[in-house]
Length: 256
Image 1 (cartoon, one colour):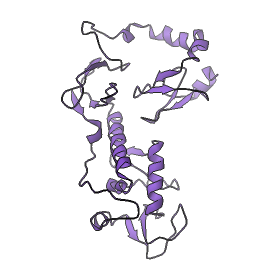
Image 2: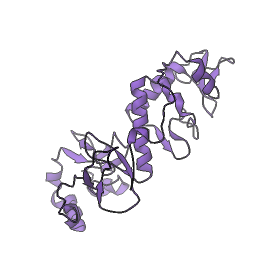
Image 3: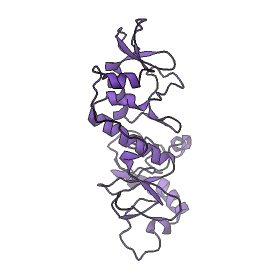
Image 4: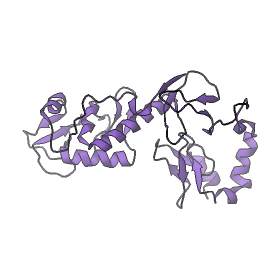
């Protein structure tokens, strides 16, 4: 079993310098000169439509000023709308939605303030784990990301990078009884449980306030709205009723 601490997977900081949107150090500017350009042609920022001295240039040739880029990045980070690409990493594309425009130099996101850049690294590391079919330790104070080689149901979060606690790989419940050979979640008749949940317990299940995201197991509260839930941790859209990834037939069979 391989384990990796989620705030360190593939995202190392080269320095501790905090860089603000409109205060770019000469070192960073030289390092990112391929995408931060002197706006000699007086191109408009595609967000605020002003002409600024320095802009970031996407592959589609759209320009964005540094101040707007910082706001754009933080907004997308708050809604977890960055994209993970196996060859690039956790990045953003052009605000206009142009295809194939993900920024390849990830240090550009240091333009955000320090706290948001730390969140960016954590989210990016989690997406790396999810992309490689890994799991996050469900212990609230841990969150260690694990990329597993074996298919064992019982997973133990490794020390010293993790908390050392065991949990079920399937339902993400802590494995508190070491005498058990399998998790109780495996003893349920899955077909009957699924049918009963959709039809027999429809009224009762609609009253449940908290459920776990089927992908990352984060507790999710539903206080109204439709049954399509977008997880704020991993970004998965799942169905509140069947607790699986949202599909078109969810609308047809049990939307209401």
